Amino acid sequence: MIIYLIHKTEGYWLSGSSKEVLTHLAKLFNWQNLHYSLNQKPLIDQAHISLSHSGSLMAIAYHQHAIGIDIESPRHISLALINRFHLNPNSPLETWCLKEACIKLMDDKHYLYKELPNNLYHEALDIDGYIGQIVSLFSIDQINYIELNESDLI
Image (cartoon, rainbow, N blue to C red; front, side, top):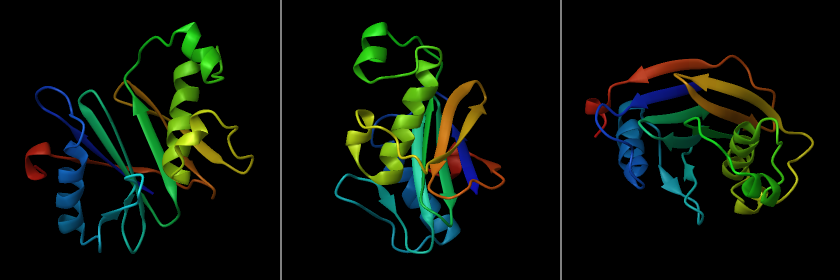
């Protein structure tokens, strides 16, 4: 599994900026037939990808098996959100990331409210102070991180 990391040098990643980055990555790495599901999940022919961005960091996971990734900058989660989404009160942000990554894996936004699958493999991520989770229905092997230069991709 590869996780590509792209730090924005100024400001934050805006909504929609990921499509432009993915288009450049598809050309750079010869990812065939980049397209999107009805829920806007990015898809390619020869492998699986998942993307998340928070603040100035974008993370794109690439693997032979279906995956989901979510990263978040550290922040407080209110008790109201903890209760509404049934988050673990001892680690609500990690649980939030797990649910968001599962949404991306399953291409189903209802996993924010649903119980997570019993056969879900997950790995906690700590990337430059960002908290995250990567999930799959298959065991997660070694994760290789590759830093990319923002200026080469946009």
